[in-house]
Image (cartoon, rainbow, N blue to C red; front, side, top):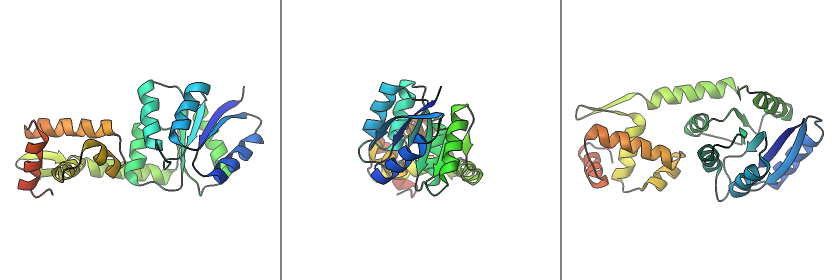
Length: 212
């Protein structure tokens, strides 16, 4: 039975290239080509593909938002992210959301085909250099920042700084390229650690500790 695939990218040339690539593979069947995240999510719900090949930067619902929704709905489709570029935090967020394959568009098409086969078989397919970057970022984010005898991770301190500047959760999520749910989880830990109950109190803490 062929590997059922949905592809999502806002560049028509990329979509046509991917479609042509899969057409010549006997063990692959393209179910849908999507130009944005909303279409991609609808196609995953409708076709229940084995693999979704997903770009991160798209109009409307972006790739990370699609990943969050796939996870929230418990959809079984495995995901291979195919993107032109991604910073370390985006890569780490993808891994946290269960992405099994992560490739840059500059890599050869044969590598993508092989990656899809490996992901469909249950393996992980992420470039070793990218994996090292993700691990380094994780360790850096979890490094301890000291303030008022309270230990905040670097990521938590960064969120406190943004709250101090008046940003809301959605704006913080967009600024850091992480999910809004992740922001809420971090802030929950920050409120608990600092013993504050409101964003105003948190903003005052940021001002008092030079986190603005």
